[in-house]
Amino acid sequence: MALDIKICGLKTDKAVAAALAGGASHVGFIFFAKSPRFIDPLEAGGLREAAIGKAKAVAVTVDASDAFLDEIVEKMRPDMLQLHGSETPERLAELKARYGLPVIKALPVSEAADLERIKPFIGIADRFLFDAKPPKGSELPGGNGIAFDWRILAGLDAGVDYMLSGGLNAANIGDALRLANPPAIDISSGVESAPGVKDPALIEQFFRAVRAARDNRAA
Image (cartoon, rainbow, N blue to C red):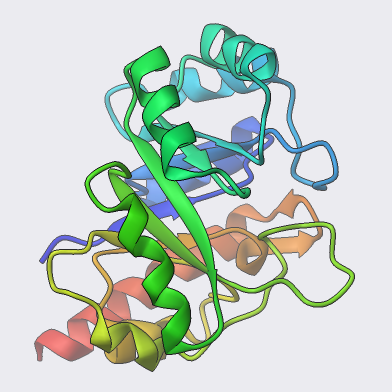
């Protein structure tokens, strides 16, 4: 089974180049002002040029206004939208109709019961992203470097397409792939030398760890 890999929160040419060199299927740009990974839509539009024909460019937003989304779509020209806030199924449907783009809906998870929250979005969201619930007091809905118990994803319906996110890094990706067997993974803080600072060497190391884990499973 092919494994989609999204490197999220990219801000530099070098980080985008490292993600593409490693074989990323998706590159993510974050448009949430409180995040250390925030990037201007026009700047993201310049960076995403390198991904054309190689990886899908994803615009990540948190309860963004129509005006800001209009600006993002116009200046960045994303292939997909990722909604990481408290957006309703109705809001997803509205934005899909407005922009004609597929939508990833991110949902926070800490226990199996949290997976019930996907039900109203089924048939609307093109893909889900499961991230760990943020710690108390955090202003960031994602990118906190926290993992959840991946084993709870074993109870998901086989038809649910999702990305596994939250606390992934080169050291634990083998366990994550073994326990959850996700169709896709998403990493941000796990390839950073400091909050918001992507490290090309850590990106390369992560891809090596993914390949090693998959080779071990195939052996």
